Length: 446
Image (cartoon, rainbow, N blue to C red; front, side, top):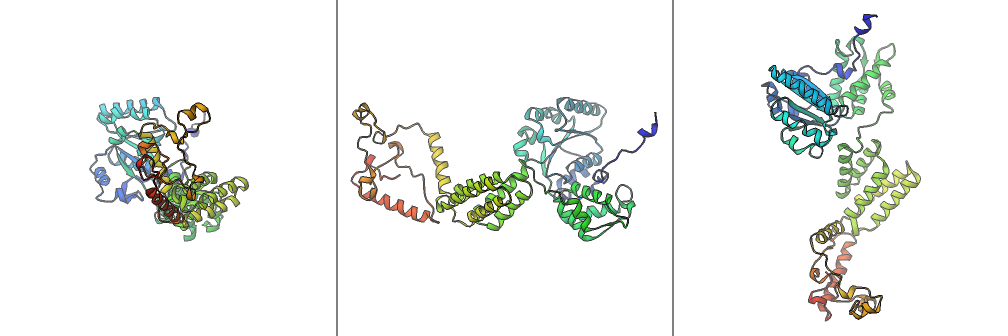
């Protein structure tokens, strides 16, 4: 058998080859790693602590964990929650326990830790407690929702941020100049526009930036030039970061909703287009827009709900891009419309009231009486038919159970159509106060 088959170096992507070996070479995240920051000081004193690294893909979570092990002279154990189970956890713990007996420190790095269920996460707790290993978890999801509170209480959470374009361009230049593990030996020439395009397309993800650079480098012509046109060819089918169902997904829909609430058509359009550009299902956005119409505008402009429903139907019938244009129309209308959360507030208030109070009987005068027996026991007695009353309003009547007759649940705001609704309800209340037919002796009309 040819031994050379086993002596050939294993190929590593450019991003893996360029992993920094010391803290000073690590790019970005100055908010936690700059001189004087608590994490930097802990590492420089050689005393690591358990932590959770939370941030989007490609910002250096795994790299930082490896550096922590290097700086603190600890053994590095890595498991992935995507590929590992109880068996792999047990094996990693056994190795860490052996290291502990030998007087060596272990850092156990768990990638995608949010993918472990609660019982699997609990398996780490006793070993964190007794110092078998220092736990470092990496996650793209909000730890508050995805990790056990017991595990979180034993680990400090550090938020890693997307890398800005200047940092990414600096990383790309370093890769092009590095003679040992980078692309320096290829003597490639690159213009500033090409670097800018790669950084912009990478959307804060260093791994993506280096992958694009490496693919582009493989395609350069004999002149060795990385041009803007060549980069555009490589990234033309690339999509921006958009984790369907993950934190980025919910952050962007939240930004869209808050832009509508804040009466910013520009902001609402921007986040809508960001989600569409990232591959979000337009029908999901359509459903959320219908919700916004009721929650944020309500009766201040009832046309908002009609327009939102029409946009949803247009998206279903026509698809893209016509449907997306209709959604954009609805979104800008909602953002510009007068705002009222009165219906939303009244609904939540009433649901809370119903859940927390006893099940009050329907007042006798409001009950239907389809049979003679029901009529005989008083069902429907004294019911006043509003259309037969002056102004088609039974002044003084109440439509709530007697125990709740003083409740006011819906309070229109002084904006949009609700100004008129508020005036109307105030007028009806004045009729109640003047009425000689007040039921329960209250003011009527809730």
